[in-house]
Each structure stands twice: as C-alpha cells, then as structure tokens.
Length: 498
Ligand SMILES: *[C@@H]1O[C@H](CO)[C@@H](O)[C@H](O)[C@H]1NC(C)=O
Ligand SMILES: *[C@@H]1O[C@H](CO)[C@@H](O)[C@H](O)[C@H]1NC(C)=O
Figure 1 (cartoon, helix red, strand yellow):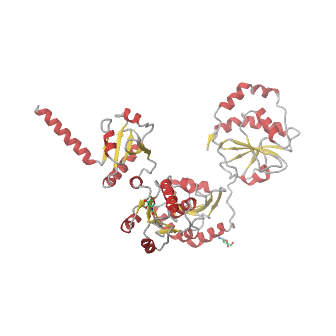
Figure 2 (cartoon, helix red, strand yellow):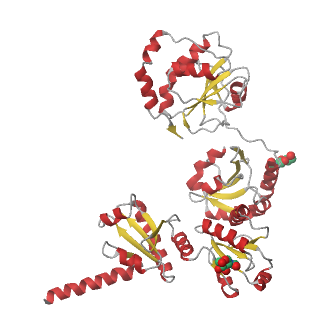
Figure 3 (cartoon, protein in one colour):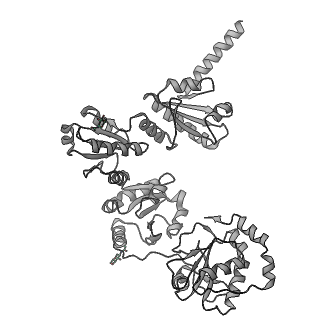
C-alpha cells in the first residue's frame, strides 16, 4: 500500500518535472481531442523519435512554445511510434507533419518556417483575424508586431477599398500581418489620406506608402517590392522567391557574415536606386560557393559580384580580379541597366576539327551551326554524367553517319552539345533533350519525344525537317529495332534529371 502510494507520488513528481521542463504538450489518443477542443489555436507536431528533421526542429519548437505561451497559443506533439493510430487518423504520412488546429474541424497544414522566430511569427498571424481592426491606441504596437505589417487607412463607408484589402489579407495572411483603421485623425498624423496603405517594416527605410486606387494586383506587387529588403540574403528559404520575382538578381558572394554586412551596407545605395528593377542579395560563399559557377563566376575567389537576368538566363559576372567597391559596382550596374554589358557566355573551346560523325557544338558555335537557316539541325543537349545519354551515343553516331554519307550531307546536321559546360539559350528540363531546328524556321524547334531508335529519329527528321530527308537503315540495325526494343526504349523512363 505504502509502496504503491509512493510510486504514484514519484510518477506525479516526474510528470511535473517533465512538463515544467517543456512548454510543448505531449498528447496521446486519450488526451488529444480534449486538448484540441480546449484551446482556440494549437500547432501540433506529429513526429517519430528517429527522424532527423524532427530532432533538428525540437529545440526551435520548444523555444517557440515558450514565447507563444503568454499569447495562449499552444504547441503540442504526438509521438507517432507510440500513437500510430492517432497519427493515421490525422493522415500523417511523413515526419515531421505540422498542423494548425482551430478545434477538431478546422485543420490546416502548417506551411511556415522551422525556426523558432518563424514559427512564432507564423502562429501569431494565425491567431489574429486576417485584418485586425486598429485604433489610435493599438496602432503603435501593431506597427512593430512583426517584421512587416500592412495597415490600411480607409473611410468607414468605403466598402470597396475595405473588401479589396480584406481579400488580399486573407490571401497573404501567412506572410504578413494586416491591420485596418478608419480614424481620419490618425491617418492625418501618419501623413496619409483615405484610402492608403502603409507598410511598416523593421529594416531599410522603415515604411512605404501605397496611395493609388485600391487594386488587388497593385497592392500585391507593392507589398512584394516593399517587403523585400534592399539587400536581402539568398538562402534555401528565399531562393525561390528571388527566382520568381520577375526581375534580375544581383548576387553579393562573401564568405563571412561580417563581410556580407559590410558589403551590403556599402552597396545599399545602388540597391536603393534600382529598387523594384534589380534585386540585391548577399549569399554565403562558404556554404553556397558552388552556386557561383551557375552565374559564370569562379568558385574560388570571393567576395564576388554578378547579376543574373533570370528571365533571359543571361549572366553578368563582375571581374573577379577587381575589388568590389561602391563606385565600380555602381558603374557596372548602371552599364548593365543601360544594356552596355555583354553577357558572359560559358563555352568550351571551339573544336579545331570534328572527330566523329556527330557535329560537336559549343556555346560559341551554337548560332553558326544550330541556327544555320539552310540546314535541318538535330541537336542533342547532354550532360557528361548522364547515363541515358551514354546509352544513346552509339545509335546517335550511327544516325549521324547515315546522313553524312547520304545525298543530304549538306542539308541535315546531327549535332550534340554538352549543356553543362556551354550556355545555351534553350530551356533544358532533363538530359538528354533532343530538338530539331528546321531550315527556314529556326524560331520553331520541335522537341523529340519518340523512342530512341535510329528508325524513329529518321522518321522524325523526315516529318519535321524542311528537306523531308529520309535515309535507309542497313539491315543489321533494322533487326536491333524489333518492336520489343522500341517498346522498351519508350517505357524506360528516359530522362536524367538536371
Ligand atoms: C472593414 O469592414 C469590416 C466589416 O464590415 C469592419 O468591421 C471594419 O471595421 C472595416 N475596416 C475599416 C478599416 O474600416
Ligand atoms: C561602364 O561603361 C563605361 C563607359 O561605357 C566604361 O568606361 C566603364 O569601364 C564601364 N564600367 C564597368 C564597371 O563596367
């Protein structure tokens, strides 16, 4: 009896220790529903003890839980090894899975960052209505409630502006905080008129004003431009945003945080001048130095600067032998903006002679060979490491020989280019990519998607080329291309990813 009571007391003490230690509540099938129903807003992590990403998340998740405790936002976790059924009921398929619960019926996937600050800021946004209605007294705190907040100053009878703003807020609520105020005196004190939007931010110039007519697209792009730091940082979380921004990106590669801070300070006036036209961002050259090669920079000499025109995939590296100074970079960017800088084209040397039957193309000969308007040109974009390309090589050689030894030798070119070592204007999704550039119609290349047999290539050239050039395949090779072989070639998933 005595013994039993002691054990229970000990257990209770242990539980108390565990919970005092952590602001993350561990849930089981017995406690889950009550906990979710008893709290307005819960972020739940479904994890497995062995999962590496879960382990990396754990300290961040703890820290966020502590910060969010005072805001009555609860963080919970479920061990899916112990609670397999509970996880299955919630459709958990990978670890960690994070879900936002507003009761058991309203569940949304968590799409925020996995760092403490990011989790906190995402969940605070979730806890607020899409647009917080503000007053003179709450405005000041709201301005600094997140890195970026948008406040609409709207007349109380201006339904149209209110609706437009609310719709944008609903759309972007995971990204920014939104508030609205209809006090004319406050607007006046802020120096704006109805209707306006002020974006407050804790970096750069501190705030930006939108005073045009409320239009969803205009507000969206205002927010995007104003919320992007003058000199940001390229990293796994921001890269996609820069790539889809629709404007060129100027990279500042540097190895240490100190260098990055210093360079971003000194180049800031240039970023300011080109705001909305060119994005500027530093990038950690220690961790992502190899990325420099993609913008035609050497990967062993930092700091370095380069502009990538993403839309046209053109690269403008700044001379790596020169020092990066505000004056020289300003001139370089001005020249770039005026179209006075030639893009750098990565190219292998032009081959002195063509050794094999397949014509070797490099970036510097691309125009002369592939875009030769008098010839049908079949070109293979390959990568040296690509297995499917190697498998294709003997057939491709044979195809080239057949045309080279035929009446079409001056009309049809079978060519290849190593697309990893040569900048080509084509968008390549995988290797090999094969296209026909027909004579007289170079703007309309046709991408090859058939089986990789000599016969099918010939058929393709005959069908899509200007000269309808068909050649005979000698008997030995016909045998190789039995229907079965063709089928196999088709069924084989035949692209190596980039
Ligand atoms: C926008 O409309 C909502 C609903 O009618 C209202 O509660 C809110 O105060 C309005 N916002 C502003 C800034 O006037
Ligand atoms: C920019 O262009 C000017 C004049 O065309 C030239 O003198 C200067 O060297 C260029 N500077 C850079 C950094 O490209």
